[in-house]
Image (cartoon, rainbow, N blue to C red; front, side, top):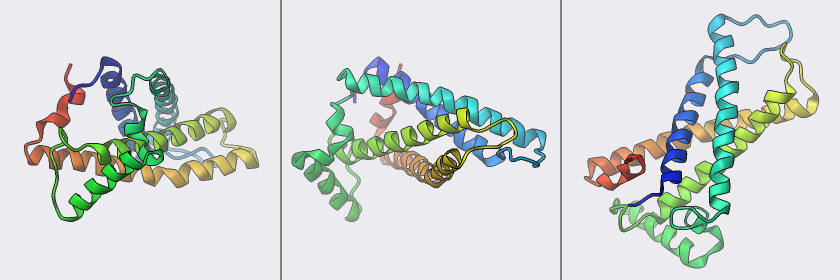
Length: 189
């Protein structure tokens, strides 16, 4: 697999950023009026905010790269839902997986592209809602009803990112175990 420099850099930054976001979410606590936070909880929250804004900036750049038509295999590879031909390829790969066949990603990567697109959408939703929280939550944790609704929305989608990260990393490890070394091409400089 061949990836452009933009794609490699952005993928690496997003992977690191989202992983750090998920790790910081394990130790952080959100401020609330009257709630005392431990230093670790406070640090985790502040780190989550700062890393989240960084991830948002990287995701915006990624969407700009998509809009400029620099996406690996085109934007339709990541969002196949609007093409019968692309969806047929995705469904064909799902049928192969249900038969416990894991194809070499050099020959079959339609499902991987669609899943990558879903991850990009979930990450973007989390980053955008996190930005609303960054600007909408007071230092003591006070927030309007609208911002509280965004907080609930943000927390609702967080498990989807955990699921995505586990499946994505697990699929990469499975491919490596099967000798499909091409999955490492995204990290080759």
